[in-house]
Length: 139
Image (cartoon, rainbow, N blue to C red):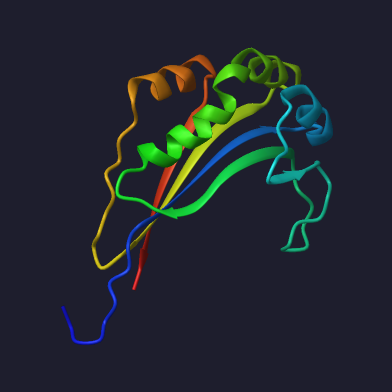
């Protein structure tokens, strides 16, 4: 280790999203009973000054230091596990998509374990969800 250099620990963020062409995030919030961290309707203007092409409702476990992503994934799944039927109903109603996104920030080659427990994989399959894992190398 170089003198004076502070090694950074890996950080993990997990996001669960419902997306659909005409998805109404207010309806989804009422139906699911969880306040989203991110939400918007088709046509609203994004930060890049372009309109969103579809609606979105997302809950997030924000960045945390982690050496195994399953810790953050479990925190998120605790929020949605008992809402499977409602999520499926909303997904069908809006002909939407369910997406689990995991973002890992890595510095100094310290990479956390990437483990998905069987119960998480099963729920994702039952929701017909897509999964995305991004690893961001910070230098």
